[in-house]
Length: 187
Image (cartoon, rainbow, N blue to C red; front, top):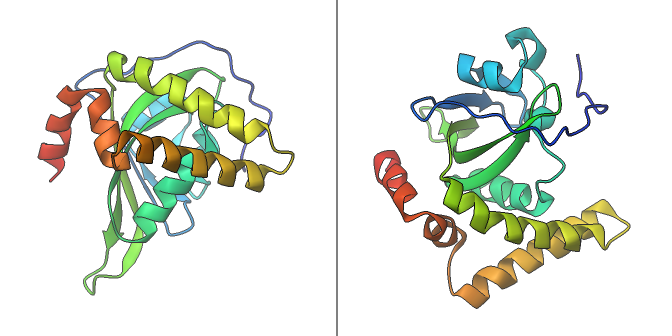
């Protein structure tokens, strides 16, 4: 099928149940190797439409590329990351997730892919993350070159974290302290 470039955002938000978990796995290149029913139902795809497709198939244009740069840098180093992500469905609707992304290792400790569990996020955290994401997107948009924009946005994100004297993980969990219990379960 290939990545659908013609999907336009609708500004319609979708929700999934608080007890539901979206799960997907990818290979080292970020191509989907597994998607559970919750993923397929909320995103509006059939399994055969997503398998072997880039995970950015569901990337919403409102998501700063800098967040994905940080995500990839983190998991490629063998570390986990938590992040708030706005995804887009096959129809252009959107849904927010609180993502926990981890590398998957083989028996020898080599990274062989990535695994992501996504839960329904705390609405209060979304209200706090949105202005930060808007600021990062504005910075990205100030540059004619997408890579330069992403790098400038990434530098801005690092500056925001330095000003707050927090790591990215501390920042994410400060947005909704109740979500810290998710971190404890994941540990």
